[in-house]
Image (cartoon, rainbow over all chains, first blue to last red; front, side, top):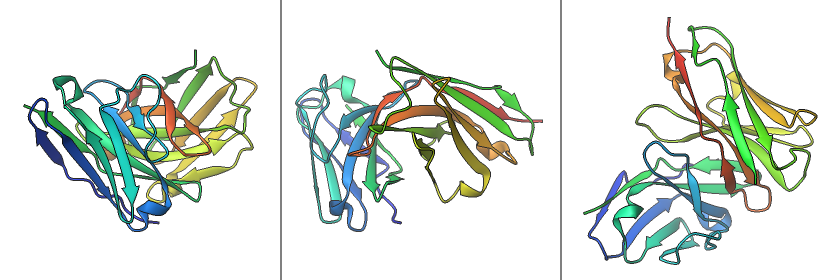
Length: 106
Length: 120
């Protein structure tokens, strides 16, 4: 069992690169996914299997996972990317969830 | 098109046991490719994973809730349910059901959520 730690908030200017981190012991040995949740909406998976994008997710979303840190990168962030982002780890059929990061694009 | 729809009582009193149901359409719950999860989100707070059930009936729970939670599956009705005992105001939240992919653990489909309020 381990905890996943995310920064509470991240700010980025439109068109710049946003980086959201997720830290946890041996996180690199798990499958990590990332979810986007906009106010009043259900979460949507934007990254799975550490680095893969589901169909329909823009290619400005990318990710990596190594060691203790998984990173979600949004290149050329847009106002529509403003949302809460959660990381999830899948390890030994158990789910671990991060506390979420509020991304502000301004 | 896969859809998940939560249903529940909306309002319950403290100390009661509450049951929520998720009805799945467009896909079968009787498959080894997926598992069926419950999450919750208190107003203005973070998502929290509650537990999941596999088609075989095996379950996994968040240790913080394990003593009060049971997730069950009715493949004949294509539904799965969450039972939460001894509720308190801290259990007030939007409850989401979701489908998880077994291989990589990610949740590919989510319901729209149902609000549960615990109040006397």
